[in-house]
Image 1 (cartoon, rainbow, N blue to C red):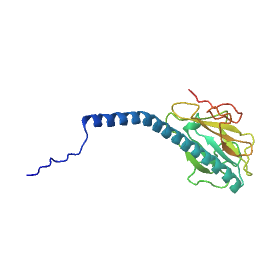
Image 2 (image 1 turned 90 degrees about the vertical axis):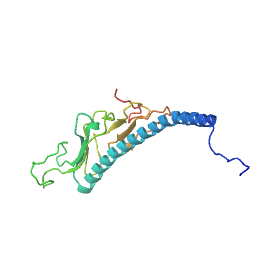
Image 3 (image 1 turned 90 degrees about the horizontal axis):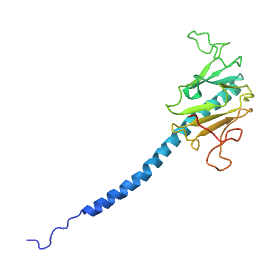
Image 4 (image 1 turned 60 degrees about the horizontal axis):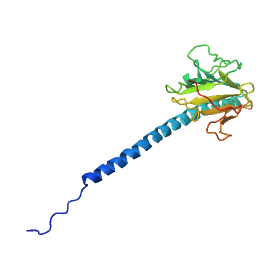
Length: 192
């Protein structure tokens, strides 16, 4: 018979309770931070989609030597947008409606975005479109497009500023108050 008792490995009830309390504290801190990270990453992703569309419009205008327009497809930009050649620069996609796309003398649809997920907003000051000229400029279409997450926190908001030269740049927090500024150096706001 073995004189030594078996060496049992395991946790005492007190050790298990302490581990559970530490896990609960960590989750209380980590979950909100993770949710913030996810919301910020989604906002950055949507912003990048819009910048990609702007850059596509500008590069296609230069490449094709024709005006190219990016235009919202609904009441607000978050409902989606289209990028198309705009031969007469009127902001209207002119197509005769037949099965042949991009025929001579008519505009050509280059990209369609179906919009942002529910709760996200994308607003501009007053622009319903940006038309790039064949030299890549967007004179008269300069503005700020502001992206907001569902929580409508202006400190989380992102913005893209388009200049008359056609350049798109990200808004920055130049005064260090935690909120980015628009093209007029005013703090970004989110619709309620």
